[in-house]
Picture (cartoon, rainbow, N blue to C red):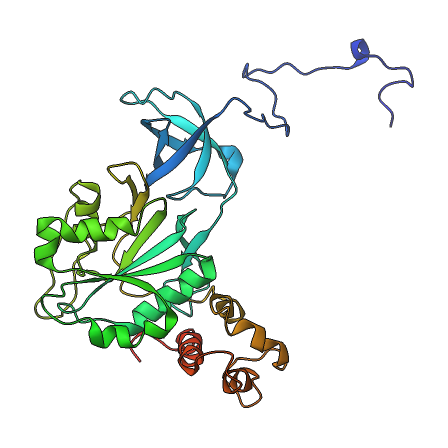
Length: 334
């Protein structure tokens, strides 16, 4: 039944009073064109520390973002109180488009992706040469995640005073990965930090590693700041988790950023499409044009065998590719 006539004007329309005195709800959201730009430094139980200009502020995610979350490394738009004064709280109203996303899952059977960091361009994989012993399968998994995210990997080998790096690097030499070898004595003297810092200039580098490998100790030396460090359990050979949340820290000369992440004991690859790993092997990728559809690159009809036999690439490179692809299907303890 029509309530009003054909020529109804605004005076004829009944408007119910708003007893609460607040504004009526609307689907039109503000654009926040005057929002300040910031960098997420750390996230702690729904509160985010954001660097706005040269000032750290505390902020929370605005309701209008819905389920979209912000992680360390994100570039965000912030409104509200931006003074950084005690007990003030700003709002993150927009997460800018990310240039890269490093993800991992708890296990290969876990479909839930966890975003480790955003907008990094380099992944430093920290591995002790002893105490605890190196875990090549974990290194391989971190490499696959780096290649999948478009990050350039860097191997940082610690505790060379306890064991040589030669044996471990025989497995990774054909991948052409940059690496730095450090010892505890060099770290104490500052020489190790200087060598590693040279590889970080002009980059945003995320540091990952097994607990107890000396990752946070190295980060402390790099940024001249102290985060809690732990020790390796003599019985289990495992390290203790001392870094509980990711944290972005600037290098002293302002030439780059270091993102320290919590120590990991597993690195699930459920989210990784094996077809993307080949992009990290530009010398092998052209040879896949003759591969059958959905080729795993480790089967009888794979064209890469002939590509290598014709001299287009080193056989060790094909071996390395297949080892990394197999990592996606193999658990770290196997």
